[in-house]
Every structure is written in structure tokens, then in C-alpha cells.
Image (cartoon, rainbow, N blue to C red; front, side, top):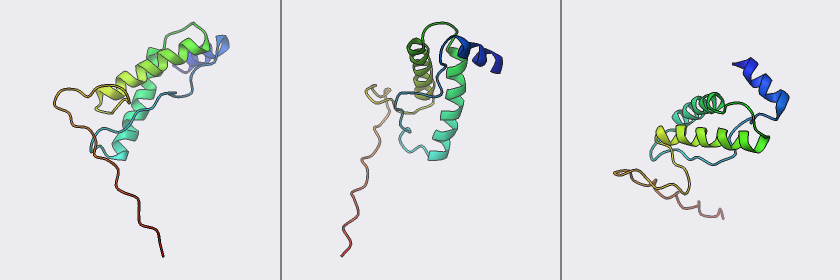
Length: 99
């Protein structure tokens, strides 16, 4: 796999990570989100294919990454929630100013 990434680098710049936002699913611990992120980064690299300019490679990477993260119950801003899912709770209010 490393050789395929190096081969891609010879033609154009391979993505080094996602350029899109994904948020943890409702109630998902940070540790699980980080595991999902690592697995989906690997998945995206495998799904990226070869050829194309840097923009197209990044686009394919981002789509694969978002699909993987969404399938693991994470949230994609702008995407509708699956049936039966609830939106995450709002963030807590800011702490009062210290006197």
C-alpha cells in the first residue's frame, strides 16, 4: 500500500487528510470518534484510486472519508440525520465570568 501512495505522489500531491468537517455522533465518546477517524482515513486512501489532479484526488478522498464516518454514526454538517436518530444536544452555556 505504501508503494501505491508513493506512486501517486510522483504524479500529483496525495491528500494528507480530510478537508471536510465531521462531528462525533450524539453521545459518542471522543476516543471512539478518534478510532473512527483513523479507520476512515485508511479507508479513504484505499478508495481514492489513481490518476487525476490534486483537487480531484482530494475530492475522492473526502467523499470516501465522509461516507465511512457517516456509516459509523458520525455527523456530516449539512447532511440530514438518518430516521430515528436524534440531533446532538446543544453545547453547555459558557462559564460565568470570574469576579
